[in-house]
Length: 549
Image (cartoon, rainbow, N blue to C red):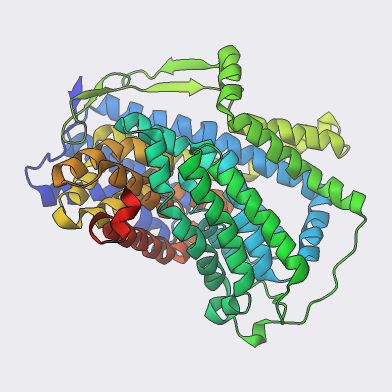
């Protein structure tokens, strides 16, 4: 048994700097030295192992086992999701169905800004609510690149859009996990997050369009942006406060898609922006609407059928009862050798010493990626593919994604190495020692957790207990700070390495992960800071304090 040490150098500053090394190495390699993602991730992993073993005294075999455990999780279930989403995209693209789908969206509006709202924000939120784990970025990135968006815009904007829904992703999984690790009431946590994020569900669509085409370009379509945001934010608040966390995103996303589509039937901007560059909102980038190819309703329905099948199956696969039933006949568990029950989390990160489990769950049937694979096979058969042709497309997809899968495995290996070594907890404790400013920095701790782990659920598991303990010590509402961990975390989703790799893969922009990171980093930290300011107001300043009760 090895107990985690959070100040191995008996100097808080020195220990925190050492803990930051793996993150700095990986991000610097990606963003500043333009090193390929799988190499940058490997560099970060190696530095994490060095820091864990020689800096934080973790046994070498345990550190390596933690990294291998993370790599396995990176390949399954995360890599499994990406592989099958891109497989479906390849199937539809080769049959020309994706072109028809693209034109059907253009028929709703040929304006790039409105297409962005429909796909990246509203449609993406549905996939986040139903499946999560990279599915929305993979789907919307592929759709935007198919519509002619520039690769950087398609990647970065898909990441920015996939923020406000994340706390309720995968049918409320982050909130359920947060309740489990903190012992706080699940419905209270759901309601508190639902008093924070709807404000940002209004802000994010405006922010998204501004990021694409500038302030002037956004003002030209502000009524549509308001409809998309408000029709998402209001159901998000109502469902989270009066029902629970399970169907928040699904209900809000369907509301947003329907309301925006109906609104565009009666309203359109004066000038249609057809430029996909999104460099500015000036008139020079705007053109009159062009005609688009007309398809029959049956052709449009066939083109949408694979994605409708995907939506239905992903939603079914996210239902807890369905998952439980599938797991009862297929789940295989492995206690990870040299790691399971061999690491002990210590106070103040845990209220009492807690032995960490390391059980790899091969839920091959209930995994979201399996649902996507089934949807892809059904769609392929409906499109007229033969079994041999499906195998050929799948093999091409594997070859296409080989470096992306390597990168994801290395990224998750890094994350698990820092988690089990206590390196990320050292960073968390640095945030927790900020006194009266803790509501702001505690929110940024959630942001850091998602940036490191790639998951709001993982961040809540990692720092939820710390948030509760710190809040109680400082006389703050523990529900507020636990919720802030999740709400702040959603803004870290756009810069976590896993999401960036998913985006570069979906848009076929391999090797440009550093460009994507630079594109979204300011948006991520700025939005996280705004969440921190809101939480600080809720902690100290009336009438915002009434939102906490």
